[in-house]
Length: 156
Image (spheres, rainbow, N blue to C red):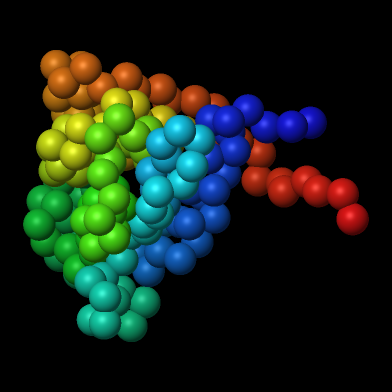
């Protein structure tokens, strides 16, 4: 059965998440506009720096609960990496849809608002719901859908 467009892009975000170097959450994000992928991002340490796979999880060591104290972490969030990649490559995210494996933290939500996205689609919930009012007030449509099946089907 052919996946819907939302399911298709959420599956791609799930594959992107496989590159994550976070020991707590594997998060992937895909920016899409006019049915074309603009950029992708996953959560992990800044480029070229040691990551949690090498050094361990700083947040775990300090006992910091998920959804709090975002600044104490080696990783850049997937949504932040989507925005950074767009900036590096001269791509505007205005009017784009972000497909992400998790809903955003408030810091990422603020950045996405300023990126002028129009829609955010996810299947997982991050432990921070403060994005909801921010997106509502900014006119960003939010859809939290069912997790797509992990099976990739194709004819051989």
